[in-house]
Image (cartoon, rainbow, N blue to C red):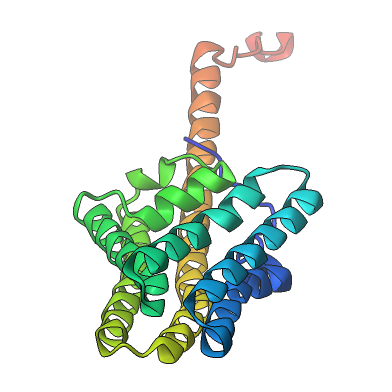
Length: 238
């Protein structure tokens, strides 16, 4: 059985990239909406891309890898391309809207196939293994956490799709930001709750198994080396 990692788990803010992560993820959206209102769609697209590239460079310098830079630019680049192709500012949000639906469906599907993504992803990222899947109560806890994630993404899709149909670019930006990290924090709380319950349960089971194994070894040792009776004193034999 995989041992349970007792290391201190990262805080919610650390899981979301810290304060800088919150600001960096919000900046391209804010820039796009402001520049679109002041100068039009094309300058807004280039401004959003420029801010994303700048963020990517900063992240690459801080982390010593180009992967954060690519990740920072990728989503904004797709959003900007869709806005350019549709010729509408609201197209900037279309990719994220449908992405939310896909993610929400993936979380629901993982519950149905008994591989709740909240547990699978957390265990993979922290190197805990998948031993929790042998414990039905742990699977149930991760099902609950995964359902919270599914509701987060599905609610994003429903609200933002409605705003998209209404053509309200400003409110789309507000909804994207308000339903981003704040709702993710709620889902992370549910995930941490499931992790702690599962880890506590698995640790107790591991300790019980170790105690039972030690007792079994002691019994085998006693059976293989029975106590030898000492001879009675000479006086007693007489």
